[in-house]
Image (cartoon, rainbow, N blue to C red; front, side):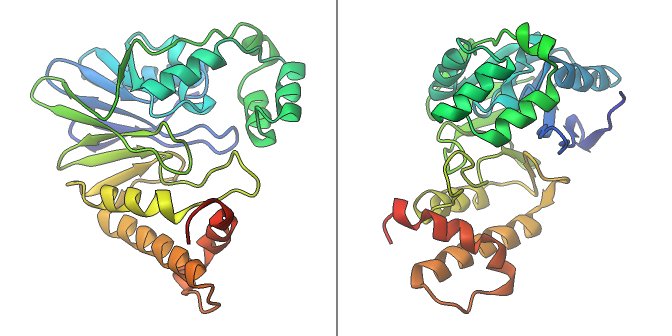
Length: 274
């Protein structure tokens, strides 16, 4: 299957997410000497489709792949990628644990029953990988980790990798090409792994401030259908903040542009300081 690889800026590429199996967006950043991949994808097949598309360009060979967090859809394709993986230490530890799991139907169902996995991820894993692919799945643990911030020189271009956390995954990091784009992956999304799903002001508000302070004109989110221009991301961030503040005040007059976030913040109330 052919995929569309979009060049967002010279040497900066993006491939759209695919919602049928919850595949995230993937990215690549090229310098004069090397290329860095952003996330490894939901399966070897997903990763290979991206790599095949990238091979049609004139970018240098891959040197690194940043795994933005440990959720399956961002790391299952790593065995297919011939590059050194970089992640936070927490991401490495989570993947090391995941590498001990079996991925057959019964094992997935059992982990949903015991609360280790959620039904949504189980169903998407089954949709993305066949039973035989899951039987052969061998996760790779990242070779290189960092704690707060890491700069990678690709030759005439430096990329910054920042640990940011957030509600969605405490181990989240982002990839920033200064003056060009920030690959945010899923860091600004809500927490899917608790019921009810939630956002919290305690984690989200400082994260949004940090993301808005980045010197970039575009933001790429992991499961959005298109990159967001700065003005679009600011509008979303302001809506999320307005919803959080409205819930904090427990007022009914929620701004229309913030209404879609209100229930997520309400779900977070028992877990944060008001």
